[in-house]
Amino acid sequence: MAGREKEEEVWKDVPDHRNRKGRNVEARKDRIVTKYYVTNFPFSFTPWEVSEFLGYYGEIVGTYIARKNDRDGNRFGSVTFKNVKDAKNLESEMNGIKMGRYILKVNIAKFAAKNAGILEAAAQSK
Figure 1 (cartoon, one colour):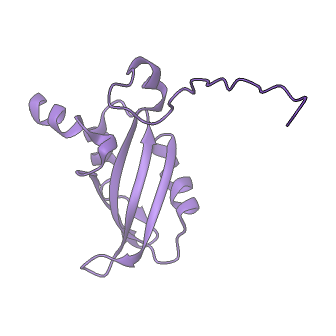
Figure 2 (cartoon, rainbow, N blue to C red):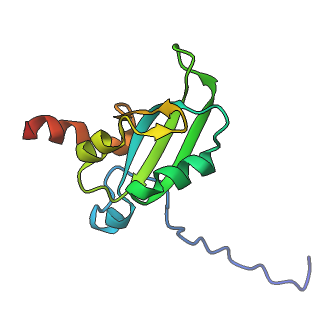
């Protein structure tokens, strides 16, 4: 290694972009979502058709339909809406609508981390 100068290593700080609990709420305002648990989907429907059908009620940012059925033999899944003003009102509007010959049952997803605080706020307003 004669004739070669040894370069000094320089360490650079890389910003940490992982999710943190202390995130700025103002920066996340445009990404506030509400997740709903929906059961009794028609067997032939895809997540894209569900998004198109329920898109009438607001901006949908995600749909999921499970491969298995619930304990009553119905297809189930979740639908995630963006910027819902009144989560309980939207729940009551969608609950009982018909998709083909199937009547949907809709609830706010109780265990979704995205819905933290929605159920508590609804309980306090009663």
